[in-house]
Image (cartoon, rainbow, N blue to C red; front, side):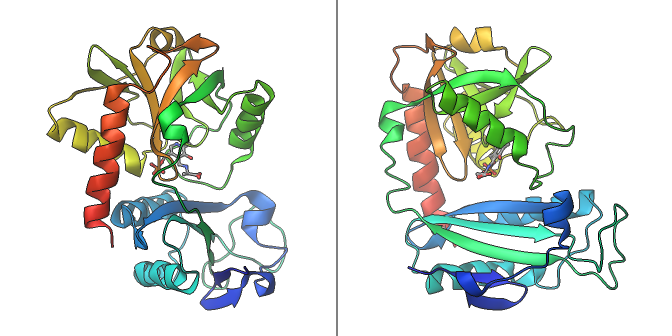
Length: 287
Ligand code: PDD
């Protein structure tokens, strides 16, 4: 089925959507994005994603697109037009397409941001069988730039990380900097030891996950102990459980790190419980 996508104010069949070859997203990776999940035809954690998007734009001195106040409406319209019950919506905003290639940012009076949204239909997103089995990861060096708190479209190194994982016969990679785990290629990383949930503290070194914020809030509400601090791969391998969070995986157990089995080698009870709470509570307040 041909998707309907959104490009700069118009809803179009995907094969009719066009952007310029001079778009700075294409030439310079000068763009930001957000991924919002859809369950029961409704948006999960939309307010958090919208807020982080505004912060990403502002940190990069990128002008706010005119449609910014209508983003919720645009997301909902795409869900409706594409008949999405469970899936994902990608929102990409670049600094736009000036007349020619230049490193210098274009004048925002004459070059307006490019805004693209598209959907991915993912039936069974919430009941993903991988959550029953858990995923395996390897560790790799974190070679990304220093502002990982901004959700930019510079995804080459995370893509390379996924390829390294694939070549190693596992599902994903956790990135390590100065001996400590930063995050997964497209998710935040956690371990559980003696019923305490440990995940890296916020800073410029990781993306401030919207799912992370919600999961930590639910964990605290359920009287679980949370420590936001760095941890090593050795500590993770010795943990009782490990898991990741993101808009596309929710809470996903990790059962192996660099060939070492975590806990019993099956999803742990804390991760399973957090997954259930996150999906259930997010569904209740979805828009
Ligand atoms: N990735 N860290 C990184 C590097 C990410 O790319 C993501 C999200 C997260 C989790 O953030 P959130 O909980 O807000 O989704 C952490 C998205 C899903 C992606 O690129 O597909």
